[in-house]
Amino acid sequence: MKKSKEAHQTSYLKNLILTKNVTKLVVNIVSGVLVTVFVLLGILSILGIFTGFLGYVDYFVFAILSGTGLYGMYGSMYARRIQKIDGIFPDFVRDLAESRRAGMTFTKAILFSSKGEYGILTPEIKKISQQISWGGSVADALEAFAQRVNTKSIRRTITLIIEASNSGGNVADVLDVAAKDAREIKMLEAERRTNMASYVIVIYVGVFVFLAIVLILCTSFIPAMVGGEGSQGMQGIMGGGGGASQKEISDTFYLACLVQAFGSALVAGVFEDGRYTSSVKHIFIMVFSTWLMFKLTLGV
Image (cartoon, rainbow, N blue to C red):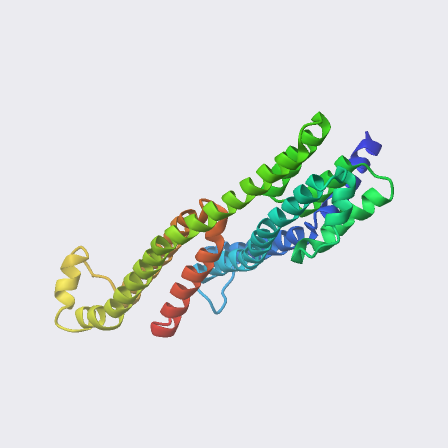
């Protein structure tokens, strides 16, 4: 049982190294530690055990920012890398099809096509050639390539190519279809992002307009209502009694703006490419902007 557990851990580490996910693991660990620390500080601040220079809300804001900041930056860089890879890979598949039609075997077609320049994919494609040159099977080399690159489009295309090669069909035609399919998917994704960009912009405009209105209320209208003759009216609006202070009202608006920024960022990420993970960078931008504007304007 112990040997089986050690083998599983070793396999997990090898898979991390092979797929280059070590960076992702480090980012997740660092983000998790920072989020945990700030959440604990926020809870201790609420309970009155810890008193720092910040309010308890700020600790929870920093927990959100520390988690979304690191992960969002890594996610954006990783997404750009995937877009480049998916944009270049159809060229390699097309070159394979042309070499196959020229009369080369599938193995020779891969060795010949690997000599080309494919940008960010060039080192990975050369590894396919090296693995085949050292006596490895074409299927194993392609599967290892798909695992290293680890994109949905490439995994699907490689599976299709291997199945066509094993079944003895016309590999050149399959390669042409695979390259065309990969290009069309890339074009559809780019078209979707372009079409949805206007909706994302509208969300940003709505967030910042709402924030501007709240800040104007908190800096001009509310002080006049609380501190001047309008204070009696404000007390009536807030429930009769002793009324609400300017700080209490500002704190309420502060929380409302943070919640609104967080929710709007989630929607913006879904509109952008249909995934909640894309909301991370929008959450960081909107929440940080809200926190900064309130600190600079009101010192909440």
